Length: 512
Image (cartoon, rainbow, N blue to C red; front, top):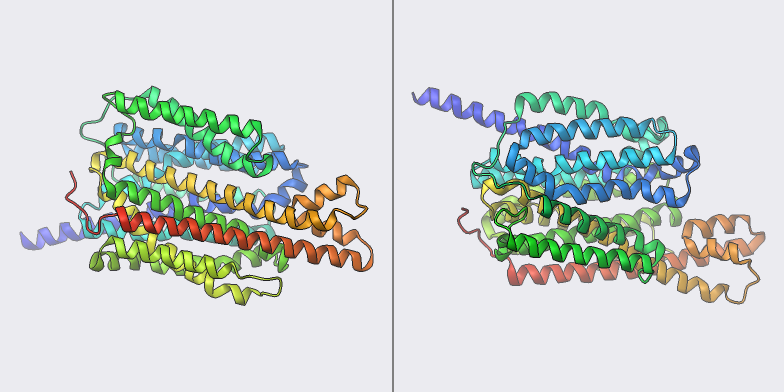
């Protein structure tokens, strides 16, 4: 009997880790898509004759549908079965990717990206909720979440590398088409390897909560994404953010009122849950804001190609991949609080040191601080995610995972939106004073003030030393704005560290 029991235990363990492999490959697919498109946008612009506004919507359509539907699909998985929602998400994501690859117009590509966002919203919370229900022992679950977190960070970081490689060898549609065979393989593998699970006592559907959450989160994300271009004081942005605030307020009021809430508000009374949610949001604020600033710096200031830019970000991915699983061992020995707070401190220090970048700095000067940030993110993600999932009953794993994912999406969008605005304001202020007394047509001045890329394009057409002077001034203005953005990000991460030190319990309490 002992031998039979051991054999069954070994087979069960093999099946669990095989399931984790399927979940992580799928997660890598979603994480890649957050950044792989960025390097392809210039090619899309040329091939489809897209405007800047259309490019913005190609990016935004995915993010808005993704974040807006996470809670609804997370709850749906808890109710009808997480495996079925996961497999449906693979079908939708793969189909949307195929449509995107062969889109002939910007509008069709935007619609396809929205479909991909729907699929991603079904997939993302299911990966973590299935994992939580497959790995029921605390120690094994923590290890699995460490691998899951490392995979999520790895996907975000290697997206530009893969995108650059595909653009060198194929056309822009390849950045979408690559998703299709992976989605098909994932669908087949999940049918055999991924077990189904759902809440034993599922709550009734909450359509009012679902609609309010979709509208509130969708409008919030739209406002954050559009604000850097339109201005935070734009009437349209203010209206969108106001509508979002009203919808989210109504959502909270309804969830507190109804007896079958989409997101039980009692979750937030647990300091372990709420502090970890805040930590995840603010880490993604710093990480995606960092990518937004550094990718421009590497390409426009240092002259890197898209592929070389992606490779320049690779150290963050590699160190994160090592640090995330290691953080689980550290948290088990010392507790979550010192590990998460230590990771946040590393991120803040790295950002602070990066803020000393000058026009004379090289990639080698920045590399050590990028590595420090990668280590900090790796130390923070897994223990924070484990704190979220470990504080909830497994019956609510889907909605808990969706809340975690939503916080990261909003945090990442805020990072790009806020740091992008900080960069633009400092850059424009710096150059406006230099251009004030120059005989430059208003249209050309607008291009110069619009972005460093625009200024360098204009400088290339200016004769003699005037073009070189404009390019040098634009680079100085950009780096000044980038450094200020790093300081803001460091302050935000420092705030996250204070929240963790005050509110995050060091050891988990017994889960329901």
